[in-house]
Amino acid sequence: MKFLGMKDNIIFVTMRIQNFIDVFEEWAPTAYAEDFDNVGLIIGNPELECKGVLVTHDTLENVVEECIKKDFNLIVSFHPIIFSGLKKLTQSTYVERVVSKAIKNDICVYAIHTALDNHRFGVSHALAESLGLSDIEVLSPKEKTIRKLTTYAPKNEAPVLLEKLYEAGAGKIGNYKECSFISSGKGTFKGNEDSNPNLGVKGEKTEVDEVQINLIFQLHSQQKILHTLFETHPYEEVAYEVFSLENKNQTIGMGSLGELENEMDEDDFLNLVQNKLNINMIRHSKKIGKKIKKVAVLGGSGSFAISSAIRSNADVFVTADLKYHDFFQAENKILLIDAGHYETEQFTKKLIYDNLIKKLPNFAIALSESITNPVNYSLKWQKKPQ
Image 1 (cartoon, rainbow, N blue to C red):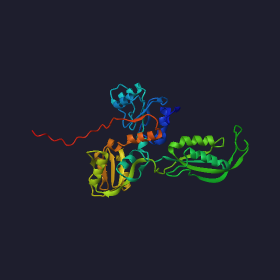
Image 2: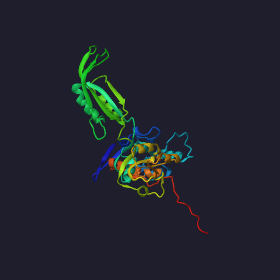
Image 3: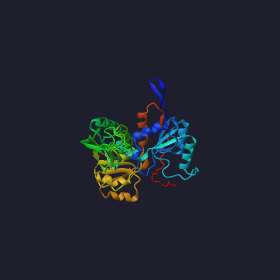
Image 4: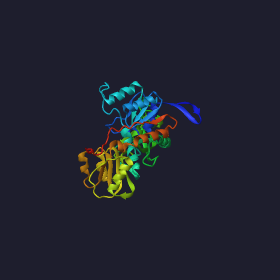
């Protein structure tokens, strides 16, 4: 980032594409994207100076044209334009044409997709809020995203090391920070002729009053935490262990779970979904005469979370892309609603835009005017009278 000056209390800076990538990585780390996904910078050079950002749901040809007309050079897209490997660029498909046009015009494309799906306040949370839910929590927590660091340090130097590790992101859990467990003991070591010990003399056994430090941390912080450990630790050789924990992470995962202010009939809830999502057609499982109070939602394709919704004792599960046999899983326990893929994700574009504006209020950032939903609906056709 380069400071250019200030006018009328507005700070003018130049930013590289990488600066925006850093903002996204802090907000929705790609470390939490699903393995099948393709997120991050998909097209372009991160060292380019950014001239403006266009936020879109999908990167289509008209979106690239919109970016060119605005003289911007970064498209931030929810869905990735390249999902599986490209073997040629002949412009015979819309994907090849988009990629070719973006490259030709030096436009970078960044996709956030399941990194934002797994965000506590991401795609599904926005859907839950649109339906008026409260006490919103993660429906299906993501596994193996919590790790534990164990290290050992001289007792008198441990406070400084701990403080630096806290600053790097260690010791955070839920609504708490600076969480650690420390136990005292004796540490021993004996350096060889090539060693350069900070304490003791090489070739002689040294005994030190030490503490064992235990800290948990989020997966995406590991590189920064270990770098801080090596930079701050007083020993030449740092003894440490990193463990992957099986604990469920209640702040990262797919879907959201919340409650309506007042329970309602199934028909009333179906109408609520249609009104709030502005849709005329809706697919659902058999109505079972159950009052709706506890609601599970998952924006986009969510059939994999039906069992999670049932285990959570939700009365209804709102998602998209349910297949014929998926509806059988309701088994008179829950009302399943397929409200459409784009429709359940429609708040995502604004969510990304609002986050960027909050972080970078004085930069050129715009919402794409293109509606990229590829699905169209027709009401029952009736033959006109002769």
